[in-house]
Length: 88
Image (cartoon, rainbow, N blue to C red):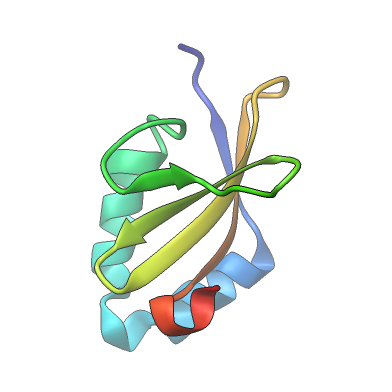
C-alpha cells in the first residue's frame, strides 16, 4: 500500500474549528489514527453511493467527516466535517 498525502480543504478546517467545542481534538486524533493511514477501509468508513469520485465518510459518534481518494496521485482530500443531523 502506498502512503497518501492528506489535503485538508479550507471548508474542512473551518468545519473542525466550528466543531471544536464538541470534541474537535478527539475527531482530529481519530482521523489521524484511522483514516489517514488507511483511507479505503476501517471501522466506520463507508463509500458513499451515487458519487462519481471515491468519496467516503468516516463516522465519529455524531460527527461525519467526508473525503475523496485519488488513487492515481495518492492523495486524500478531506472536504467536510459536520454533525450527522446536517451532514446529508
